[in-house]
Length: 183
Image (cartoon, rainbow, N blue to C red; front, top):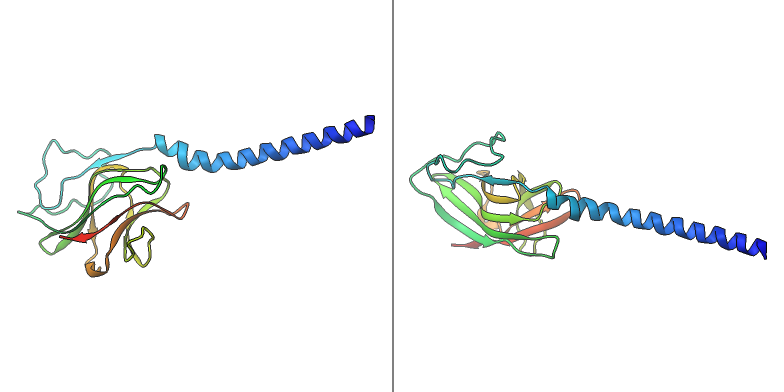
C-alpha cells in the first residue's frame, strides 16, 4: 500500500506542476495584452491640417519630432470613416479623415479612443474587412486617444485605400479599423 500511495503522490505532484505551468503560460499573454495596456494610455492633441495653431491646443506628449501640418486657409475632406469595435479587447471609437491641404494629404484621427496594444502601426489598406491586405505603413500609432495627423506620402493612390487599420505588430492582429468612404 505504501508504494501505491507514493506513486499516487508523485502523480499528484507532477499533475500540479503541469497545471501551474499552464496557468503561468496563459497568464503571460493575458497580462501583456490585456492588463498592462489598460495602464499604458497616451493622449496627443494636434491641430487639424489647414488650421492655425492655438495656444490652448498644446499636444500632450507632442514634440516627438513629427512636423506640424502646414497652416493654410482651409482643408478639403476627401474621405471619412468611423473606427470599429472588433471585440472587448480590440476596439476603437472616433473618426478617421483623409484631408487635403494644398497639395499635401493627411490622415487625421479625430477624437479617438483606441485600445492599447504594443507596437501598433497605422496602415492604409486596400481591404475593407480590417485585415492589412496590401498596405502603406504610415508609422507607429501616435497615441491611444486624442486627435492627431499623419502625412500621406505623395505616391499613395487614394483610389486604392479602402480602410485605415491599426495593426499590432507584436501579436499580428488588427486592434481597430475604419472603412473609408469618399465624401
